[in-house]
Image (cartoon, rainbow, N blue to C red; front, side):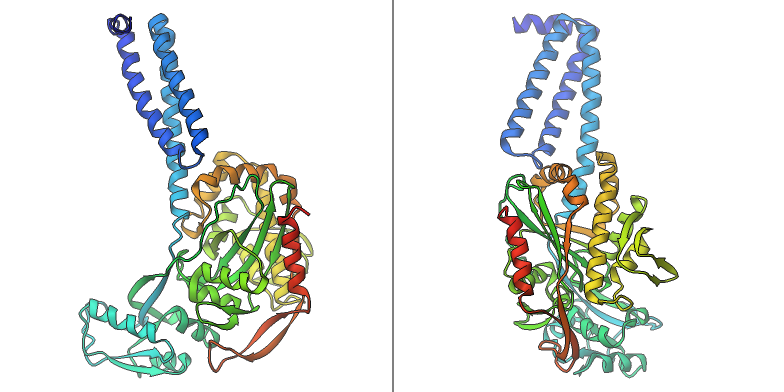
Length: 477
């Protein structure tokens, strides 16, 4: 019977075309199913595969009975499958990149911008300045020189990075070693030092990833996401270590449809596991990446963080500009870079939103005020995305931050996250936001020896209030 059916189909021109299209559609179906497998569970994939097989079998029968109509269906299916391939390619390219969560620390051997030295120059007899307390950085700098077959380099160690930088400017030394640790010292004294130096040699060293993902069903189980924003100290690379300027916890309960955002001050006096000492929370990310920031927050608050999403300054600007700017509520009247933010709603572009997210000195509550503004910007982004939650609009927005965003949310939960995002529209558009009460105190840093810095200390009982608010949402209270 099957043999007779095949020969009848094959004996006509339309039949031959249909069989060729059937083969093409079968291959395209397999490709689409393979791509889809990264985003849905096994049961859903089995159901979709079964439906595809049934459709292909019906097309074979239709080709036997109604060849002309079957040809139309084959062409339509082929077009849909090709579109599916393009859609999945676009989505997988994005998700594959942003879920690459291996972070690196960058080690540089820098020279003055006007220096005539390049990678082919002889460095014999030249002097390289390095930070006395950064033995790992010096060891790695030596490795880099050896890899480039540079010999005869003298070393001069400094107990103060400002002195090393000044000697470089004064041509008393020829090179300087810059790492996340040494740069964090230098930034305290010379904010614009990057404007005057350039890398002669640069190498990235992988940071061991110790953050463990929990297997949660985010459609049913409550969870907390760390929203981290890093500054330019990450060298413009999202996988580089950088100072954590934005630290916000987003807690969501998909069952009760409740959510909240809690800002954690960047200057919070925190335990830094990677250094086994206390310093500012922002430095935790600079020294150990996003997982270090999470470990510090978990230690201080006594809460569990399940996922994270990390973005840098360029990513924030590109995202907001791509979606046409956002309407954001300002709690204060103030002016930055000739732009006036009035108390109430303001329409801002990417640069204006970034300035708003970073400003604190002109605000009445300093770091606390900045945290309030940062949460309003996140609300503004979510509200703008909710205006047109279509695939093309979302992908266009996400494409703009592909190089400047990373998350440890598994790829097979992206669709669940998108559906949850839509189902909690009203909650997220009016999400409750919280800051922390406290005061600033000045004293010497445990890690950055010799530096007298200011730190945020929460008021008595404030940590317990924060923990209770988060746990109430997690527990459905």
